[in-house]
Image 1 (cartoon, one colour):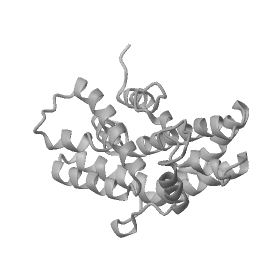
Image 2: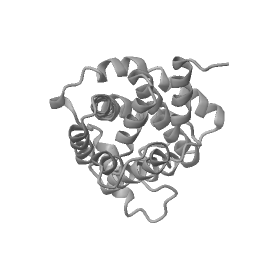
Image 3: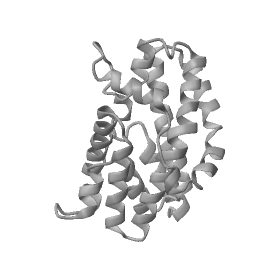
Length: 228
């Protein structure tokens, strides 16, 4: 039985956002560990509010718009603009841990990409991909023929699932609460994407100051489970 193009893109998306895909997403809390340490996040309710701030801030105004731009420049094979997008992504990673996470995820993705695509060391694409996990996902999603909206929703799901798994260990709450949270917060994604799809360059930014503060403080936290 032949796999249709739509089925192939769906299966590719499932592979890309799988928790078994070696991106290291579950090694990062993105400031949540410090937020729990200083009692900013101490319950299911406050955790939910923390995630909604991420959706209403960085996801809409940074993650998805930059994913969209990287995807577009991959489509039109503009490696210079793609590289400029990567530099811009890194400039918005406003703590050392956020920049390291972006680099580490990019390097992990690139190792896989090189198994399927023969990029060379002097290739601008390779230099860009190694620097950014977000850009690498956009590039591979485009190369695999995954529609942009599906890729964006899958990326957000992966990030949210990673955060909930971190919350499960840190707060903690039970598996049933985790599944309820995942289902509840996912419902915000479609409308959030519609807004993110319209974001112009001058509107780009993180806009989640507490997360940045938490990430900065986490660098010197005395005992840590997560890299960020």
